Image (tube, rainbow, N blue to C red):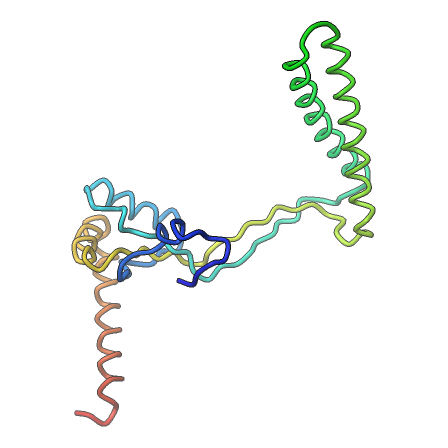
Length: 190
């Protein structure tokens, strides 16, 4: 695993295994999670297990057209919440009389500031992104890894969870091992 500049040494240590070995790969995170949960239920040392998403892709779902009105309304509502927060903070430290007018004034100022700020931000883009969307990074496959010292026990436990899948995985590993041995010896060796 490469060292990420924003990750501290303790964070990097939590994302490492000592000689990790693959237990299986899954099409969905839910399947990988089910396997790890099964191991946990069987008192397996799951602190030595890792789920790794591979073949990452970003999916963006367009939700609708973005208009000046929607932008201003969103800014206004955000500003109202900020105004309520600031008004309550003032009320905590100042207390006393005039609580309602002070709270109302911070809400109105926050709403106006939020609406103007959102509209200016929207106008500054020049119409380059006139839509709203939701995006998510997802993996195509999820691989469950464990430290080498636990791999045999983990595979035996996972065979209880799904015997057919375990048999298929065993065949796949044997084929990979045979292919590696063939490549090591070379095609001319007999």
